Length: 151
Image (cartoon, rainbow, N blue to C red; front, top):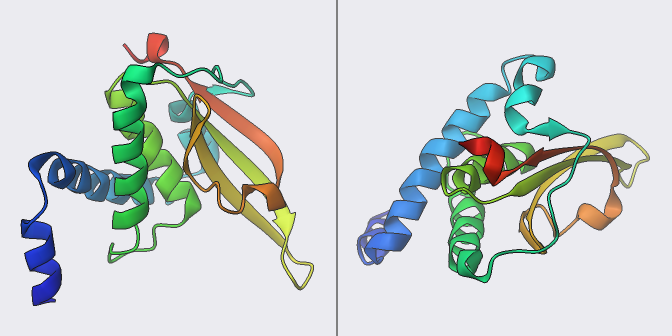
């Protein structure tokens, strides 16, 4: 535990700010799971649409920081921060910076043939979360969050 605190204290300010923001937004996104999805869905963006596959090169540093923060901090939250929580938190971090994103929901089958679900987040051509297993799932819905609609 002491080693983790020392490592956290040794981070640069930008990384530390992104980690704190990720922690807070992962907690917020986790609370959304207690509501009916029909109530949460409008906050996710335009249903059934996608944002462009192009990305502004100026956003690349933000995309890297956000992806790293979400995927790192989600392992250390005292609550479960699975794929949907990570995708929603990442979408909110991108929205705060005026960056377009698309959240995907998919279904598939596990090794036992049971139905499973997955969520992943894309901004431009870059995947922020959930990309490591997204190929195993069929997209059943998507939500586009456009920077133009954020303001």
